[in-house]
Length: 388
Image (cartoon, one colour):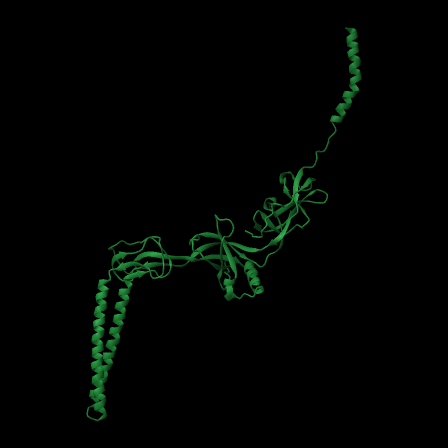
């Protein structure tokens, strides 16, 4: 037993230096390798700059169809929600009473014409007799007055005839312009137009073309006016300036039109200028009251730097990008951003074309610390310069 213990002690004594040496190596700190991040240079491509604002669609024409003469609704020719053209008959108010009044007016006009003919003949006779000193001045004056009175009566009769004809025409309620009629608000046989407040029969709305109203800031007004001067476009030629519109649920700006109106002055309370565009709307995708996105191009395409939109960060100081410098140390760069182009974002200032922008592994990148950059090609950059 003693021999075995002695032998074990000798083995332990021999291994002790090795164990102590191994423990010493384990206590030494080894710095972990820098985290890997994906970097890519900014994409360079021509981009058209746009003024982007929100607006609302509005009808070019919209009006209530009212009963302009009292009477009973005899016919309803419209279909609720139907598209109609100018002159389409929509409602008929009982026309017979007005037709009778027109006949009476015409008869009275015929009688006034006969009276005028008789008075004119009598006056002409007095003119002949007076020229031969056969008739008195009193008879001449009387004939002249009778003729003028007959003429006035005829003029009144003609006015009554026109009024009767107008009232008869008002019994036919027609579409004043191309548009879509709303649901009718009266029933067949209902008495309408008998009160001081006009009876609304229905409404009609013109949806093609359609207006889009929006407000432009003072700075954007100056930019647009500068571009118009550069292109030789005067204020009266706004329709030469293109505009595009997209609904909130649509991708991009599929509806194209032109500017149509700009207010002559900036509203001092808001610092904005009301403006309007006009757009073809044959398929009625745009409806009055819709909120829409509007953009107006600001000049020709110019070369720009773009980065993936997901690479951008933001803090209280604004937007920033993380960039790897020549020493592979992360730097935070404050940038001025422009508009979005598909999945990319225009960078107006803050980076250069040869910067290495971190586009992947952002959570592992800490400003001031080293990283291991992995270069990535900008294959995901859009081929077109259409911004949104």
